Image (cartoon, rainbow, N blue to C red; front, side, top):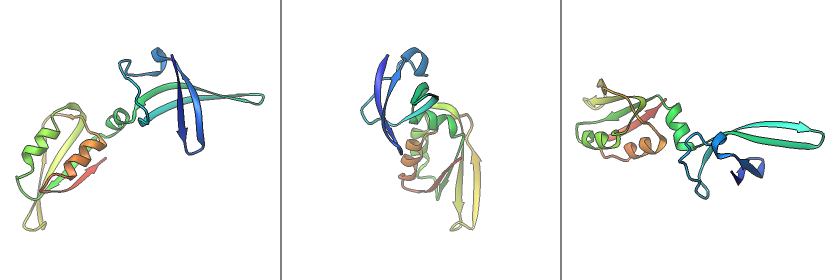
Length: 138
């Protein structure tokens, strides 16, 4: 059990967190200023507004669950080793690599075998790889 001070667009508030009921990943430890995805139940009795947390996850885990596919656009084979390095973790997402040919007038699309863990961090890292022209996540 713990008390967390949280903030959102409406301001700051404190929440009572019951580890066994709230944390979907029971081994999760909280970091200061860590982005979280929170599900709440709110009740209003007289003048008291009460919020009870139902589920708390690191935002990276929530994003990984929601992102089901990624399209990576490349100009040539140079970024392939980097792609393989960033896509080692198995997960639920599909990845398609689109190779742009003849200055982008033609393309070859290859769906990678297997399923991968996808996240905003992985998409950002792939965008920074030389030879990758774009990364689209859906």
